[in-house]
Length: 240
Length: 240
Image 1 (tube, chains in turn yellow, orange):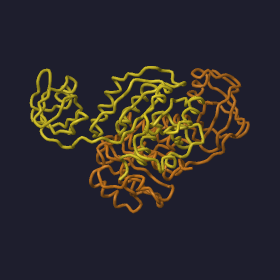
Image 2 (image 1 turned 90 degrees about the vertical axis):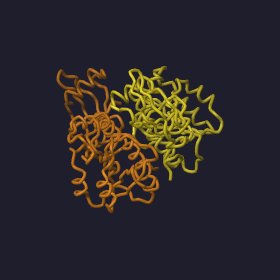
Image 3 (image 1 turned 135 degrees about the horizontal axis):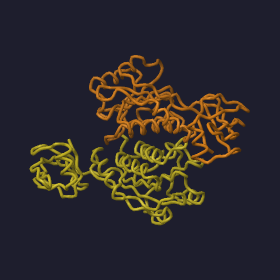
Image 4 (image 1 turned 60 degrees about the vertical axis):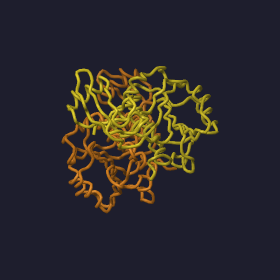
């Protein structure tokens, strides 16, 4: 069944008009007609089986029929990723949504050479990935912030997995063994790695856990996917 | 240092002419000149620090100077992947090279709708990823084979990690706990999953281990990267 993320409130019998993009997608791309069912979610009210009631010129109308899955939250896991080239950043956002990150926070570091990201476009990618992967929320994408500022404002009680390619860090499963569950952040550096000053700052943080991602050099998108995967398998919702 | 995979034999003092693509890359793209150093590897003789001796009209000449890393093999790990859309297949091959798969074997299944792949192009992608990631070989890419045939010809003693999204399979780290090391194959199905018949066949294999990749639906590229990552972390060369 087609899944759509919508901003509207959802409750039994709620009548909604979908936005132009979703209306066109349902009617023109997926050739849906009145009576066909879609699944709707908004990040607050769970997933609702819904029926198409109107295929209008401007909008498709749907009515929420029954709650199929009550709202639930995955682990409180942030991915913090240094700005990398657009294609790889888009891959990272898509995969963060599939791998259950609650938020993607963009960072600038000494070795990033971009300062901006297309947050609106990244949010669209996160939304489509959330629809496809079956989760009940969409990861929030935050505007880029300097790594130093991000660390200065770090929330109390949240641990930080810091992928340290350059150092003598423990293998990641060893580094995570015995650690508590969420909230966590997973930090991925830029393609050129962190600067020595940044590494020293990160390694000195009492809440940070340095980990190695194996003997080969990984691109930033690979490192992000691998680190999120291992976090989910060791401490997150991939456990039994 | 720039790393290049070459077909030539490597030994101290060996004089080589690079092919037109690599010559153009060094001279025109990377603006290298006589005396600059590159690292060469061929999958057999280790990695050699080498010096550019000639920037010719047709070819760049290099001389192998010293063995920097003796040849070594990573774990004997095959990725077997059902044919998926070209972009995602190219991502999978790039990531398989970064994540240390020794071979990528392409499979057709009941729910794949392609029969062919551009193996030459995929080999180029694997080669560039191997150069970038620092490994000493390039994963071999095999022409697509039917899944049934692949299983019929399965080599004795090789175990198979089978990512079973549909079933009641154990979480992947639990499924791999206590398993022996390589040789292994990691099998990733097509976007539509395996057919019931294929699942039954796979689950009946005495050398197969079924595993779950968490509660969300993963695209084939994500599943491949996650499964290779977890295999390397649990049984491969990401351990200490």
